[in-house]
Length: 287
Image (cartoon, rainbow, N blue to C red):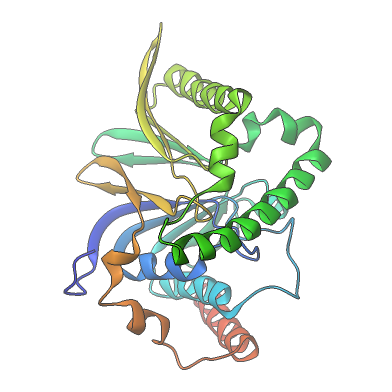
């Protein structure tokens, strides 16, 4: 983002795996990013609110502000698509529901510049999710604990001048099975996309931002993954007919850090929730 506070103009943005309601979520960074852009379409590709680990004891104001800002975009008639994921699978029963410019769906085919992007969360390819959901939920809690330990380690690592490290990334990268799973996931999504003549296939779920061309005997497709806002702090941006990966960096927001965090006078969750409900009712009344 440029330091003159000018918002970047985009045709579409995909973010996924924000996991609001967990300790690992970088909600402030999500909000800064969203406020730095102006997009015609915002695609929330699953696991935005972590309903598996949701607790009324932990849902900070910064997390509430992200929800409020998204609702604010809806009130301004920005097209917002909420694609359901596994951590927010409760919303799947509401697939097809529309409120103003917000629509809850399980998948999306986006037309742009004569091309088609097939967008879905990706947990449908997860064998653990399909056959051992309890194991997947246990793993999610372990992952959140690892993130907490990681933040503690990084605090001292930065104090000592070594910079940040990612324990979970090191664990994942050191296990061959994990890398094999990612490769299989990507190729499965690509094979189906090629069979259906899509130009792009876009997923979330595996927290692995990437853009690459995948080929098989039938043809090829551009596979993309939007990553996450736990470790990678990444998104996908569509501009001039093509997708690119965006990665958040604190230094890009030096001039806007204070204004973004203090833009609202709302200082606590109770007041923010009241304001959020008001925003929600305002949108509902427009239907």
